[in-house]
Length: 336
Image (tube, rainbow, N blue to C red; front, top):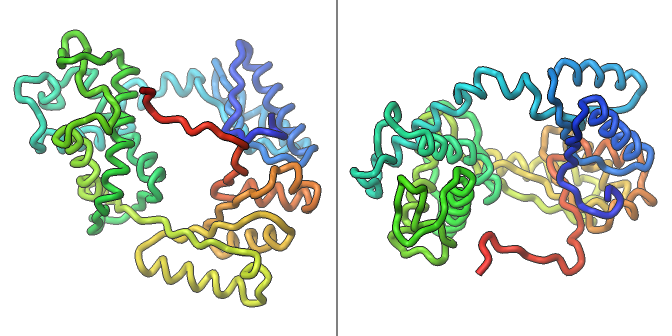
């Protein structure tokens, strides 16, 4: 699978903490030996995170890089005060709920419009999920949240609002489903039934506005948390620019131009030759984010490029876009 599939992550979830970690280390060793890029390896730990960190330090002395191995589900994580008391995103979750209350769509008779202190847990959970999804939604459409006191003026285009509203509606549908809600012709909170659990395109325009409004309000919402929204600006680098003697200088100047314009420059570089690896590492040293495209399967690239240098470049990249799978199926969030 490491050789042939564009894996986003590997999850090791057996019954034994020791076995889980051993499998993860074996995977990492194999990938390094074969010069394969390793996706994050998530290891289920039922005991303490301290055991995993100690083992990682021990293994690291054998020159095996374990930086891609992470624990999840440990007792430290599950019983930490912030997990039990929901304090991590509580401030933003409250802000999300208050923003909803100020809007025109709340039904005064619905328990979902109660003040936060008297709100049912299912609706608090919904606000927390919406708050935690903000960065995911922004990244999906090519934006990022950045720290900035007081925030800044920012307006989404109509097309961006529509795209983000569709994502927000899909997120809400999944969140309600995970919380036990089902679809129904009429909303019945006591039975956990909702009439809006349908595909976004099937909603009436007035109902779509319920998803558009929180998207339009995102800049103001983040400003209250001293954050702002920035667009990512992609700078595509072709082979001609890679070979140019002044390539680094010109790319840095272009990136600085977009920074001054209030954007986040992302250099998108096709990885095909040793010169591409050299350029990617030089740009990273200049503090520029590099996103690598792999027009060929990794195994083909590994045969032509220096393995250690290639692996280091991949590990340091902001993101790696694998080659498209042949006849890949394009799935829609909802089936007909």
